[in-house]
Length: 308
Image (cartoon, rainbow, N blue to C red; front, side):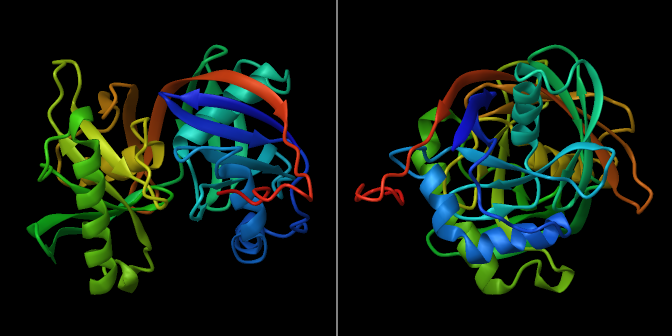
């Protein structure tokens, strides 16, 4: 299996160029469901240790349905097949530049939740124009054992998020374990409460917000992903959800730009324009760097060929 690894703001992306399962040629949403339900052993073997790592997201390249797109892609982490991935799209674009498949300028990429556009500014800098994002509900409170009542917003940015501002735990790299444990507890409480179900939203990401040490930065975030790893980048789909909430509250105007910082200090530049369905069309600019090009080998006699 031929793969190329990159990182976006510290968050790794593994692009799978060949060697994936045959998912057919239907809509990408159907192919993503097939990957999730019929090929779980495959995708976990690629991303789990010893081949992968806990923070990694994989990008499986597939033929697009839309002929105007340079590729189709299905993203997944160790726990779930994802609708969209912002850092992964930035990493994918940098990888396609590295391969000579695209150059500077605008290109379309098809995902299971719709077509997104990337603008390649240079070999490392990419702006992603995401699908329309929206706030689903505001001021949702949930009682969490050992923590108390937590209140936040439900929003969609290509994946489902519960956004908490301010965070009940200071958003600093020294608090990663506590932030993770509290995030897991909140997600479990939300799922037990059925939060998002009425709107068809699977809430599998949690975001905490706190102040940054830099005056140029709007806020610092901690993002808990479905596999319980934290996002080293500011999280592109999470930033999309954040923009939808800021716009709905009148806290950020159309076209105004802010800087979002991750818990490890990497940043994205964010802005939005109004969407046709009442949400926002997010714009996310970040940097990605190709790190490795390799061939993955799956020996039948390897006792950990399926991952650890």
